[in-house]
Amino acid sequence: MRLVCDIYKGDKREGMYLYVDKKEGLSRIPDVLLTSLGQASLVTTLMITPSMKLARADARQVLEDIGRQGFYLQMPPTLHPLDPAVAENYKLPWSQ
Image (cartoon, rainbow, N blue to C red; front, side):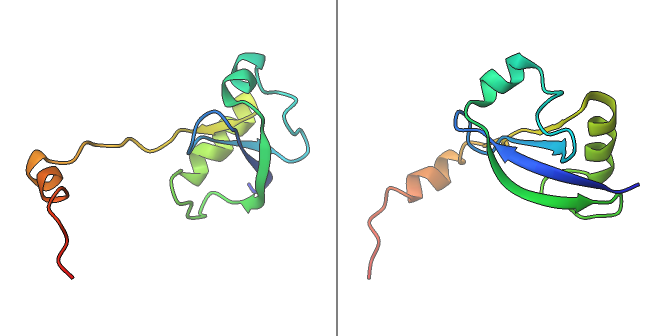
C-alpha cells in the first residue's frame, strides 16, 4: 500500500505534525484537534510506503492510522532536562 499524504503543522504547538490523505485533506479531522493545532499550514506532500523511513514516525503506523481514523498525529519530541552537572557547565564562561 502507498498513499500520497499532505503533512500540516499548526501554529500553536512546535513540533506537532498532522499527516492526512491528500485526496481527503482535513475533512476527517475532528474539530477539537483542528482547534488544538491552530492555523494549519501545509509543510510538504509525500508518497508514503510501509517500508519508507520517516524521521520521527513509523510509516506503517502512519498509513494504518490514516486508513482507520483519517489522520496520523505526530507529537513533538519529549524534552528531557539536562543533568544538573551538565547544566552547571553551561553557565561557565567560554574561553576563546
